[in-house]
Image (cartoon, rainbow over all chains, first blue to last red; front, top):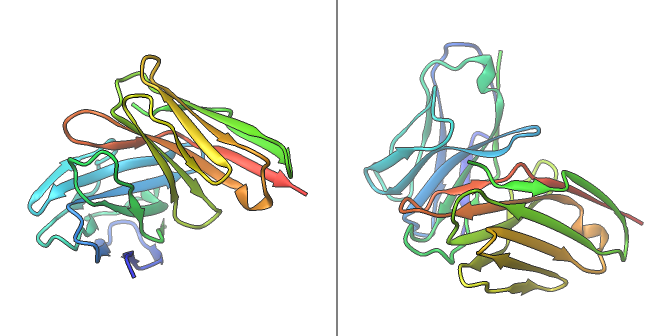
Amino acid sequence: EAQVTQNPRYLITVTGKKLTVTCSQNMNHEYMSWYRQDPGLGLRQIYYSMNVEVTDKGDVPEGYKVSRKEKRNFPLILESPSPNQTSLYFCASTEQAGKRNTEAFFGQGTRLTVV
Amino acid sequence: QQPVQSPQAVILREGEDAVINCSSSKALYSVHWYRQKHGEAPVFLMILLKGGEQKGHDKISASFNEKKQQSSLYLTASQLSYSGTYFCGGSGGSNYKLTFGKGTLLTVNP
């Protein structure tokens, strides 16, 4: 089954404790991205990757890091989480960055709470 | 810059129609529409490409006016299952970044 898998689904952590949210897709997609969703603000892009070893900042990248060492994986790293990073996070993948008529597939989301 | 969606929320009775609008201040090559149920991931509905192409999905259709950089989602004879938050996403430029609007909460009551 084609899917994007995020882990964990729920996470409560303390301020400053480094954490990683994993994202993996099994569709051989080139393009992957991370979004955060906050009430009233919609989905805002954090980082995206057009292919292996190619990543770039989205609209709200501060406080986050990513890496793309393999095509299927795109982890989101919070080096020193703060309470304002409490949010619902979604990973998404698209077949090819250059194909404009392809849909984005979303993971099930990770609800992160930083206390 | 995020596309602007309107209205922010709409309440319907089953069987009524609704239109959700999405406008962008920058040129778009494509417009995506997604629906999200509470606590779930957004699910793809359709894509509209530059050229004014219209696409349909059962009783949900959409249009894209590239001159005005506006898209509209039409929900006909709404069903209870249509309830959720609808997002439009715009893609333009060389990085193919997909930027979403803030969403429109649609509630369909019996």
